[in-house]
Image (cartoon, rainbow, N blue to C red; front, side, top):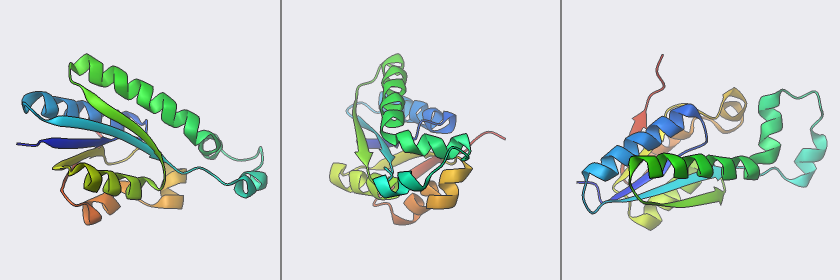
Length: 149
């Protein structure tokens, strides 16, 4: 059914649950290919100078986006291996919405699987809801895995 599945993860528990769903879909569709991406905003040096020690931890984490992306993909590889499927992995320094949509277009994805919430309030305030934007602009179907309440 789905031949090219793109799973987008930001390192949150909800996005890793979405990755597990994508793995099950890939495993149940012989011949399908799973592609896992994480995308992040890197702050400019000028923006980093403006930040101080008084920032909440959630904002401080944005200073280390590249390192967080590496940790995210390490956990994603573990989840994919545990599911017994193979995948490609990529970290992209770009707006997450743009990265997901452009990756889906390049891959010819049939399906994007992602979580509904994850980045946290600080990033949602700055960047808006990634899943909502992807739903509206994706070139293919989007499966959004909701965070349990």
